[in-house]
Image (tube, rainbow, N blue to C red; front, side, top):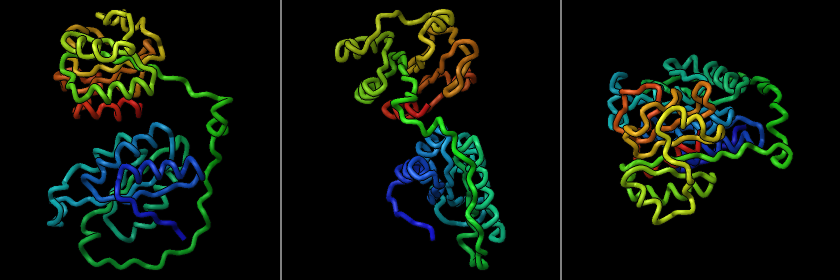
Length: 290
């Protein structure tokens, strides 16, 4: 009785599963391969996590440590990648526990606060013959009532408008500029520039610049609008020695700000900042999912 849809893009599948809940209040399941399947689907899983949407994700775990001998190019830490964005991550190693594991995962995802739950299927279950008994008929799982304020029309309960503040350093690649400008257009953001990047942005897109100087201390950062999100893009942080502690998704204590550091060379030296080691052109995904 389950409807199945074949999707050729894992990222689209995860977003579609979140959309199923938004439209029908029914939990959808995403079935993907391990390795690149997990990394491709991660933005949709993270979206469900931040939007508090229940979602079930089932993926394979092909690893040399399990003795599978297949697809070793895809050997990644699936559980480690999914854990920050899932309420629970379970590895299934016994076919006798499959039904109970799925039922428990759906129950966990459907309990407030809602969110994704992942099941990783051990490789030995895929490479060896398995005997699966008849699944007993069970009554539909009763889901708790969804909070009514989340169902109210946007006209009566508008979402707060985010106005990110992007501090651009000299390491910004020219290829990232179009993505940066498109994101600022969508979010009504503003840019502060430093060093060599100033001419790159000022000359091509001056209307997005704000007039405030680049903050030089924690005190100046705290004076920024409380609803603004500070995004450091391609900065070596030397001109910003005292940003408030905090990371993406968690406001710094007392500041009301969220700090997102993208691609700076100080990874590992300042653990209270969130570091995203990725192509600068891909920062839009990370920044807009917060």
